[in-house]
Amino acid sequence: MPNNLKHFAVHADDLDRARSFYTKALGWRFTPWGPPGFFLIKTGTDEEPGVQGALQQRREIVAGKPMFGFECTIGVSSIDQTIAAVEANGGKIVMPKFTIPTVGTLIFFEDTEGNIVGAMQYEEK
Image (cartoon, one colour):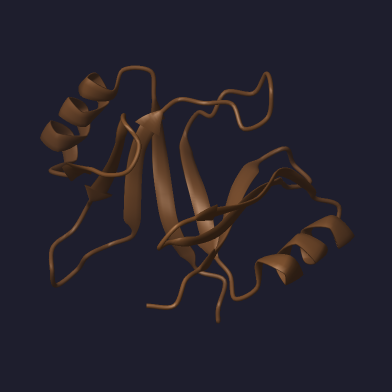
């Protein structure tokens, strides 16, 4: 499996304001899903669906470092091999494995430049 970008998340202080902005500015559509304050984002059309997205409350995966910008999650074939590779190459696991039922197993790591990145071993359909 190639390690492609599979998901992005927009973190917001005001979810209603952010939803309104992206709906009006980019035509994105939002659907509530999962926990309160979490929305799936559909950026494209059926013919060109784009990358799966989410809108969620701003959070700190690493204490003292609120998430700004877009959070990206890479699809990987083995979360355990990815953990080993991240650590072997100077990265640090900042959120241990967490399983999201019906979706997959997720980690967050900090790269050598201080960027926080998600990696998800998706469940097979």
